[in-house]
Image (cartoon, rainbow, N blue to C red; front, top):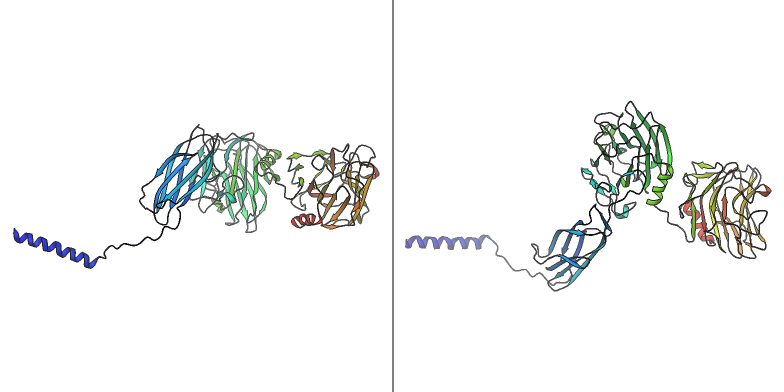
Length: 572
């Protein structure tokens, strides 16, 4: 027994010696000086996030990451000043990655603060503001589906989450049209959503789109039965090249199919384009930026037989033939409707999603004539007299086209004042040989009130003139001539102050400013006319104008030549 004891002691001694020989001993490493305060990153919620659920209280899954150069001491998480959780022990003493589900978020604005402290009591606090909103209420008649893509794939009316296939992503707030995020497509990725509650004979979809031309074709939104069956459901898709993509629609009517070849948009998309399509028993219509680009007759309402899901961001799952697969484009503010939308309803959605913000100092009126007569700052429609129309190839997009005995009227309230300006692009039609262009006149042959911009000339040239009433008199400016028939557009600007009026062509003053004895007298001039001298300046033959107008802007100040030149350069 004594020998066995000695043998065991010898074995242990040899083992220790072996360890010391073959394994490096642990040595102390000086961590260095604690130089920096902790770094706090709140992964979720994002700044400005909103939560919408059909309950009084919601949950938020707080995700955070905290790091320190030496060692963390504590991390405190607070909502609206009240601590909801804290951490003082860490598996990795320099880093904390944590999630905490807080279930008591009430309606309203909230502030999340995360405060981290290191061993030397240096602290860092990160703050995020978020909101719990009441359940979404449809904004538009017939709206049955709304997906804003604000960091999730939830449909906000039913609170049903779309099924995600593959790895679609998000574009980030700076790339979103509206809200906190936008859908970003990926290869072999898309969303599906049940058609229950959406399968109606009349149907519309509206969304914002920023196209990626690669691949050269893809599905966009579809509800298709299995197999190559296009007599049921619908398929919105794109086809084209690296520089342009055509938006198309196919709708199944049970016994057959309806094709709508839509129109092209530029690729790659550098700006958001609003896409909408409508389906009724008699026709389908595709709209781009609120304009109906093509209408196709239909043999009947849409047949939904065998269509169980809507695919978003691809032709998948059932319309992948002809290579209409995943779309790498961006989508935002997707809405579906159980009715055929009108053009004015579509334009209203566009205006609400993307309200126009004046581009220039003093700008109080902007009418781009993109298929409607809406002034975008006030969001008011002009009154239409007669049958004016639109020219497809305007200076920017579409343009106003005058017609016999036709014009628009609009209140002058925005520009009434001592100083004002009007700028627009103009392509004159010399027949008739004279016409009103824009005017606001008192009844009768009274030129001591308001203003009159008009043209006079012959078949080869037209002179643009202005007349401004000063109360006791009138100020004339004989402007300059434009050759006719016009082969291109001329940028026209009229400025008026309390002392002078000026006319500019393409940013250049046409002649020295005409002196005025006083500012404009607006007595009795509450409405202005566009496209005619009517109703009060029809004498001397200054009636309707058959010319083209585009990008009409008005200002409550006298523009400088530099400001006019800047507008001209922006739009030329």
